[in-house]
Length: 196
Image (cartoon, rainbow, N blue to C red; front, side):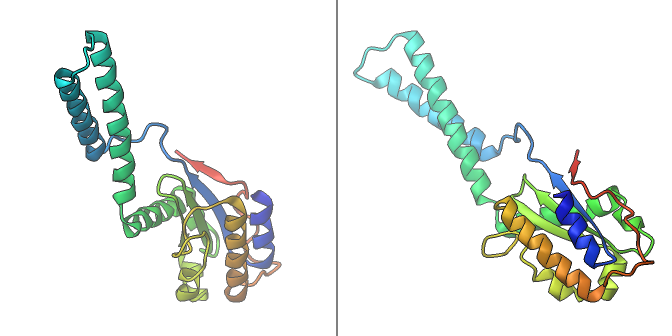
């Protein structure tokens, strides 16, 4: 990844930073997940109590716990699938803008910082640029870049897709902010940053 960033920076005076926002190890329990677990658990308990099968107390507890966990997992998955793409995109863009400031990409000499955020939690790739880039590169061109996959062009798919997106970003930046030998030295490290 650092090599891809260096290759982009050879063609432009912009400073590119790739940041990764990792998904939490334990996602927050969505209300739908909690409701699914409780609902399926209660249904399993009712089945055990009124079933023609003679189940012991241990078996009833086992059936209720397993059914509750399956219901909670299904509810959690459904809750994640119900979040609109526009909401996921907005969250990723907010995190990218915060990373632009948090990583110091807004303090480059010519205000030409660019952050590409790989948002694992939202499954999106987002872009944030500083004022020097906004003034030199048409924002419509940057907004139309396909940094990821999917119909919107910002879904986090795989590394080759992300690298193609970085190369396309580099071409757009090189048009508006071509590399100049005396401008914008390599001010920021090219290694990807993992956000806390």
